[in-house]
Image (cartoon, rainbow, N blue to C red; front, side, top):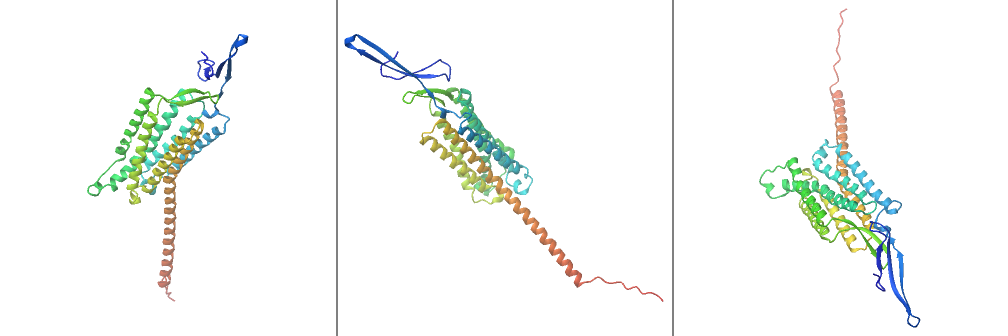
Length: 348
């Protein structure tokens, strides 16, 4: 059971997370003395701290800060935007689907908290489901919004006939995205579920516990599905970039989708081309979520707030100018046509 010169890994018990050991054996003998011993060396392994983000580590604070700050900032932007939904500048911007996008950004930042703690089967499943499903829940309002803008005023067919797409009909168009994502997550949850797996690196005496799957089919499938949606959004936003701003937030959508695309590509490249530990990958994911959601939400909300402020300033200046003109015209009228004084004749 102990081949000579080969490192063997073993665990204290079959319980998940129990202590692990590595051992090596070799034969020591003295031929003339009739001495033959088998020497067995056993060493405890060291559990890698960078496989998870737990309390007491610096990365724990970074993840908490990124998730909490991102959720709070997106919530503040949503409240500032929603409270002004009856303002003309917000009403013409299709505020319902913009609000749904910002709410999705809040929830996506909340998924960062599932990255905290030790890796277990339940946590591995929650991390996969929360992250990938909330990506679709966040992107779908943005995609149908830019699609309606393109269909109404951007496509060649809209130039020859009147076309109407109601809010209810547009909301129904989001459902296929959710159904496809749910189908992908459900299928892979049965055929290749993400689980916490243990493995021991005999060369470095390290004991690893990470979330993993048997193959990369799930990652490839999600990359194709989510990447295709972002690419379609980029194409539609680019084709709609020169449309009149009165028909929708074309520039804001263009900036938001391109920002999400850039952050997504950069994150995939860094995580696959560099040798990052599990905890470092979690931090990269949290920062990417924070940047993509907060910056994209700011593109919608801040532009409308600035427009509202300018509109109010213009109205204030206009009313002040009209008031001054009325005062001047009234003063000139008084000087040109002074009031007639009545003369009362008295009889003596």
